[in-house]
Image (cartoon, rainbow, N blue to C red; front, side, top):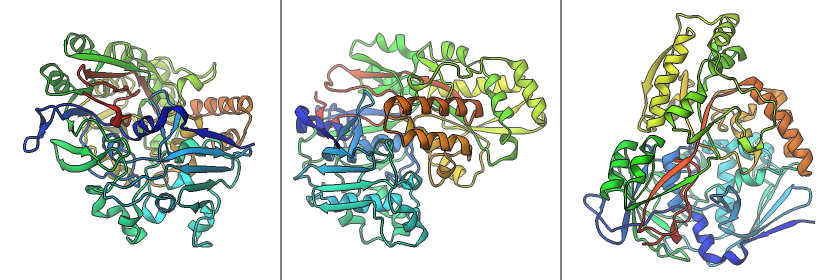
Length: 534
């Protein structure tokens, strides 16, 4: 039998909440971008956005956070890492896990008043699956029936996507694919009436994505002032309008954001564990904590010959005292990460790569590492834990004979280094691997190598791919878990990434704001903006 999932008793208000994440607070002065009245709030962005608010672009935390106010998908992930209906009112999964039928909410309108229909979804999914659009997630759609024929030119359309009527959208997988639901059903939907006539090869560069003024979420885009703020305002076409009129999302360093929490200049902000006691001392601030579903890591570019040897990657892990890093830099508000998989989904017996400088030296020597080589570690500065981590990594790798040069980068620059395969090492975080272990495939699989997917290290292990595919095609929960356990052990041994830590999400919220629910990470999309109030 097919399984049906409904929005149920939560009602339209919570479904609206599922949409995007907004913030609520006093009304900002439009000239200065500061919240000074009673109808707007200031919200912290942990990095400067790239300014490309597009589901086609490579995933970027601050841009995704802005988009979570503006855009919606068929489903969304709630703060407990469960899939919830969003644009869909309910959905069915066939007993063979090959057909996913979404029953869309009726009566929805785009912010310009045009009706939302299944044709918008069909248009968006065809675009996201088409490599010609430069979609950074195109590889995630390869499992959909007909995509391979479409990409190769054998077919003019994708048979696995259909819209039987204006209120129904259907995805058919080529074979049983349990994880496909979590992987692509959360993609943001684009307006066909705005972008439908743009040639596919040109759509990603369309000015719309710099100023997306026609959206489905509880907020509309107003303005983006580089190095100052992104301004969004309540969307009157939204079914349950946001209770806070204006939100200003402001990029700044975490220490500045913390200071502004105390003086009322910031209403909602993630913060460093080093600032926990300070924040707890602010009488106007409440603190929320949430276990993370992603992790902070360092990518080692395996298109470079010196990172292809697994012994080098293992050595880098042994060289870093990650337990001490978590204890000292994060004040214990994190856990050491030992695989790409969510810790709660990993089996016993994985290699923890405990701090062992001598073993690191031995592995590097066996791999023929050149001690005169200097490698560059790039990161986007501004978060105290990440800034401190880079210097610790530089020092501890240096102690085992690896010369590291640190390079600060802007968020907008980093995707270019992926496209050119020019970086050596890059520190970044994020991801949600708790919803379904299949999400890990996006960053590990051979066919997900950038730009087709999120595998930005150009790692490839056919054995791992086979294990992941077998697990994902298994309907029985127990069998699937056992198969994923094998995949975890394989991926852990291959050390595809330099795993560091899974930080606990620490959020400070002005007590006058009601309804905010913390995410597990500072780079997670915001949740339920339409339900926030003052």
